[in-house]
Amino acid sequence: MDLLQLKYFCRIVSCGTVTQAARELHVSQPALSSMLRKLEKDLGGSLFVRDGRGIRLNRRGQIVFSYAQKILQTLSELEEEMQKLDVSTSLSLTIELKAASALMIPIIQAFQKKYPQIQITLIQNTETSSPRNKPDLIITASRKKNVSGIPLLREELVLAVPQNHRLAGKDTAAVEDFQNEDFIMLSKNKVLRQITDEYCRRMHFSPRIVLESDDIGMVKELIRSGFGVSVIPEKSWADLSHKGLKKLHISSCPCIRYILLQQTTEQPNEAASLFVKEIRSLLITEK
Image (cartoon, rainbow, N blue to C red; front, side, top):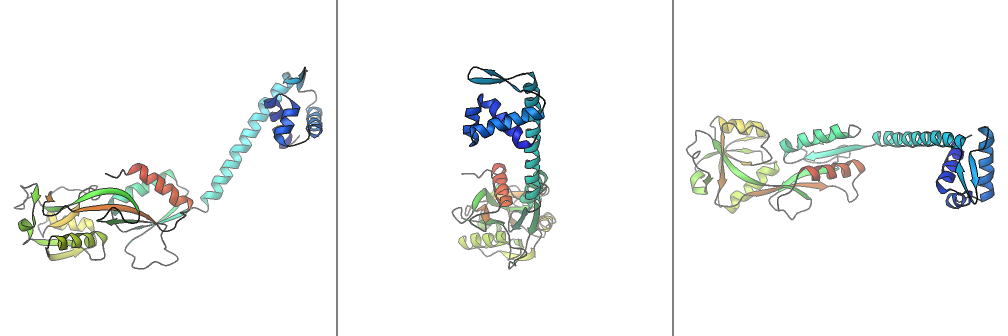
């Protein structure tokens, strides 16, 4: 007895006739009948009751059919597990974070928990890409929505001041309100800084920058401590405490940025495709 015999036997049962089973299995009826006789011989007796032009299982056949189904189901599960194992040894995902790191890290952690077989590499602050760190996906930002990439999030850039600041009692601020303030900014290589600089040019405003930092947590702490004010994203920095800060809408110019997911190839690998699907279900872009 072998697995092929069990597969053919189950097909005969589902079809109800040897003729129909042979047709669906693309084998000759005599060959299938011969296989059935051999199986019955191996198992010590007939498995079917011949009923007119059809056949139905006898008691022995019912028992064999029950076990055959279990055996074939187990085989199917084994094959599926082996496929997963093959996938797990080859799946990897490299993501470059150019923006919204504080927002993306928990999402990436949740994805890794859901797909532990995928090896994830995160890269930041890279001026050039090498074959070893070439990303599959890039998280970046733009002040325009209609650029290359999948828009994940729309958010306003707001003015952040200490809670004891003279502007803290306001909900909005115009350029005239903060043009003489000291500003704390991210470094020039950061995408947020580049977008902020563009909005400042649109408002014909040159901020007096007294401190620069690569660390968004440090920027917030410096604002709380009274070293200056800054322009920060309203949503993607929200997981970091806003305690001690007051956020004001900038009325002189609507300052909006879009968080984008960019794919570096037209045909992303399986891990990248899974991540794109997952992140789109988590982040809903505001229209």
